[in-house]
Amino acid sequence: MKNVLKRSLTGILYVALIVGAIFAGAWWFWGLTILFGVLGVNEFNRITNKAFVSNTTTLLDIVGTILLITATAPQFMQANTILPDLRTTALCLVGYFIYAIARFVIQLYMHDGNPLSHLAHSILGQVYIAFPMAMLGALYSVAGKHIVLAMFILIWLSDTGAFCVGSLLGKHKLFERISPKKSWEGFFGGLAFCLGVSAMLSLLFPGYFHNLNLWQMLGMGAVVCVFGAWGDLVESMIKRALGVKDSGSLLPGHGGILDRIDSLLLVVPALTLYFICIASSSI
Image (tube, rainbow, N blue to C red):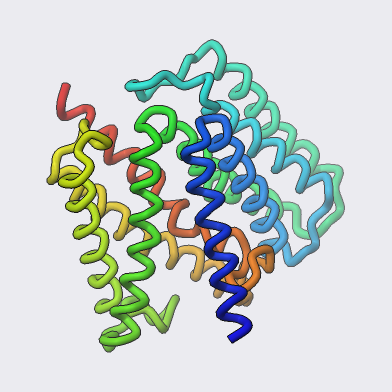
């Protein structure tokens, strides 16, 4: 009972943090992406390198994460366009290129285990965590807070639907090699939740999603569900390969930050590409 209360309280605070940042404004939400990016990269370095990682490596990767996410900070983005202000973004990108070069060179002078493994983990951490967080900031600035809020709601409902339906009806394994408890019944339950809520959002709040018709909103729900499930499986694959149950212990009852944003890390790039395709088709 104590664990349930602890897990519930942590979940409520986590949701409140995200929703609060979304409605507080672009700069608050950008700060949230920085927080998630820094915590995620630090956590990823720790578990992939079995805690044998130098402070220099951690600091370098955190700096790289901040530079990459800052390139999509609110003041650098323009509403209703997928392109940032290149003049202001250029400095951050130059800084990120310097980080990328420095990361390789500095590894020559470090003695903290397998150098190739550490380099590979640093690069993967940037691609897997920092890049999606940068895209999340851009998505907020370009698509708006209601789209981002809808995305989070759909991710949470997909997980809830999959758990509820899977617990009651789950018989056919979805991906037994990676996650034995997940079932096809649970996946389709999560998909039904996503599609149903996407339709409700489109019909009840058309003013908030004026650029998306009903079918496009349904497409958004499908993208979130499918890539959210893949994102969950990818993190499960990483943890299984490393022999760890949770990515960390930052969130009581929930594990680490990566355990909470695993779906988000694939949903954001996929959804961004989906919106780009919609925008391109209307030109």
